[in-house]
Image (tube, rainbow, N blue to C red; front, side, top):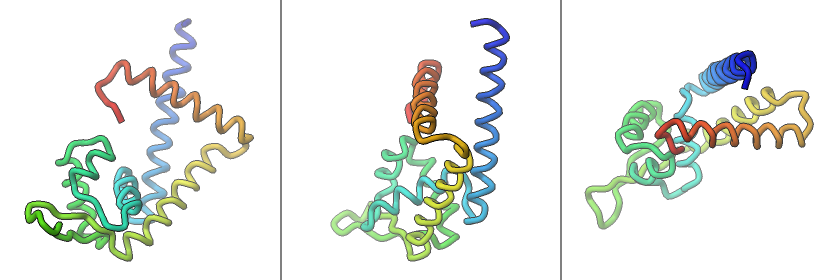
Length: 149
């Protein structure tokens, strides 16, 4: 790859990644959420009976302390409650409140806004190609890092 191609590729990837993260933060701020909290709440929304911290961590592909920190930030906002697990006093389940359940549809709407804005003017086949190419880029980059999710 020529240096001019290297520079153009790096510049485009960095600019898009930064701008997407900034747009994501702005859209989620309207819900009083930060990037990452949306995915956590959405995962909880898929399980009406709730999940334990370790189950959430496994689904997110992160360590339990990361989930615990995120949950403590969300707990004050009334997004969920902790319920004890019958038969195991050590475990608690994280269960969305009415506010949390309503928030899931708002999160999905925010994701729709981001996706539709980012791909505006693209045909469906172009969107599919974009996703395919981004997954290829992700797979390639995984060879350089220890990240797996």
